[in-house]
Image 1 (cartoon, rainbow over the protein chains, first blue to last red):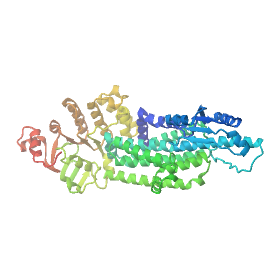
Image 2 (image 1 turned 135 degrees about the vertical axis):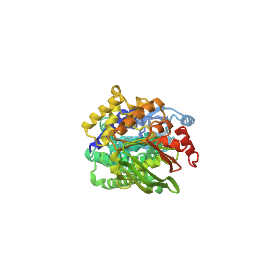
Image 3 (image 1 turned 30 degrees about the horizontal axis):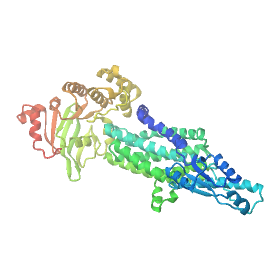
Image 4 (image 1 turned 180 degrees about the horizontal axis):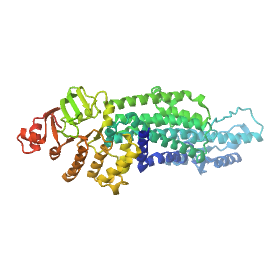
Amino acid sequence: MKQFLTFVKKEFAHVLRDRKTMVILFGLPIVQILIFGFALSNEVKNSKIVIADYAKDNISQELIAKIEASQYFEIEKSLMRQGEIEAAFKTGKIKMAIVFPENFGHDLMHDNKSQLQVILDATDPNQATTLTNYISSVVADYQMELNKTNAAPLQILPETRMLYNPQLKGAHNFVPGVMALVLMLVCVMMTAISIVREKEIGTMEILLVSPFKPILVVLSKAVPYLILSLVNVISILLLSVFVLDLPVNGSVLLLIAESTLFIITSLSLGLLISVRTQSQQVAMLISLMGMLLPTLLFSGFMFPIENMPLPLQIISNAVPAKWYYIIVKNIMIKGLGFASIWKETLILLGITLFLTTVAIKNFKIRLA
Amino acid sequence: MEVVIKTDKLTKRFGDFVAANEITFEVSKGEIFGFLGANGAGKTTAMRMLCGLSIPSSGEATIAGFDVYKQTEQIKRNIGYMSQKFSLYEDLTVVENIQFFGGIYGLSDKTLKSKSEELINQLGLQSETKKLVGSLPLGWKQKLSFSVAVLHEPKIVFLDEPTGGVDPVTRRQFWDLIYEAAEKGITIFVTTHYMDEAEYCNRISIMVDGRIKALDTPGNLKKQFSAGSMDEVFYELARGAKRGD
């Protein structure tokens, strides 16, 4: 046990003394959370639009005022002819044009219905759809107001309730995603590199010749990263609660326990990479390419897995981050308990056991 | 004389390739045994088998009385090892390295403290204890590395090309450490490329293509091959080699 502690102490010295490691270890998560929180967002705000108002009646003016008041749109120019609208789209500056026909207000008042043309730049289809939804809701709101004053016609209004995330905040989606990404990246890469480094500088031989058990070499390398990663989890949670206003709805303890499991999964993956590679560069490359990409693609955090072709959906099951992402979402956002995530936990546990067994087997073969 | 290394037809095959072929020799306690051979002759393979890092394909060997097949744990406790790659942690200080390597051999805090003081005084490193090992000159690192390898007072210490890349004066100082250790009864098993170092050994063996082609004291070998220096002896034997890089 004392030997083990000596080893862990030395590992801590390696980590804490290397400024680059420290930056990756603690800078990465904070920067990621802040970037995802403030810079990258799938909410569409302040989109530039143009309005061509041929009606110029009370109704159209009121509606324009409503549009202007919403934070989603920024009216670039108000009076335009058809040709100018097209030119404005071609410059790429505007995302949407709204055309009020000449007798817009008149038709509404007399025929009880009127038409409004909405033209969108659909080069980014997601953004175009989002903008359509926004404008529809602004129009619907206005219609409701009108109906209060006038006699209401029969109509069905769907009342949508956004569960768990009523404001449709992007943070709800990316905080669990960033947690999965950061832990995966840090744990896999750091352990892989730290073990391979011992091979590169020749100290691994010395360790293997010593009476110190090889399995303990591996364990004592994992301990500092386990502890430091837990510090990371806690700092990400603090940032999300206090900076991004995203509370942890479920049990914090459960969340940390599940994170520990995922950290161990990542550590065992790093270990597997390290026993199969001989240089730090290769270990780093495999960790980055082999872990970052699948984690981004298949965790469900950036691209919905349900929309992928079946073979890719099957592949995604082997990506540990996918399961962790589901777990974190369930605990943190939905506030659910262990009963809702025992299956995912079991899968993660299985992956971890598999990786550890393969890694340790390979480690022993290297000794022979 | 007590025999501490004893091998009998020790062989290691990698597929069809016989890296070490029926190696048989004995080394006595306190002896400085030189293990010579051209690159690819099988020195490192042989040494790895003796350290318990590699399991022999056939043959027998005992290290400090322990069997290389079954008692690798006991062997590890009784040997020290210094590899050709300089093998201390550059980002730890001198003291930290000593304490780490002493620590994994299970030395008690008290022993470790007195041992490291003794070692630092012996090497004249008093003013460098808090410095990172990476900032020391190569010759110092090698001396420190050797001292660390014998810190736990092993019966045998294996040195794999310990003095690569340093000048003859520093090499000579390094050998002073080796002699001191041998006087204390530690057996030295050393591989080298430098023929001046071969002359410092009590006995040497020369490996060619996985076999031991000659084994005697430097003086006797020179007589046997009627050569003026170890260089000539080595050249005479290694000329016939079919392997190499």
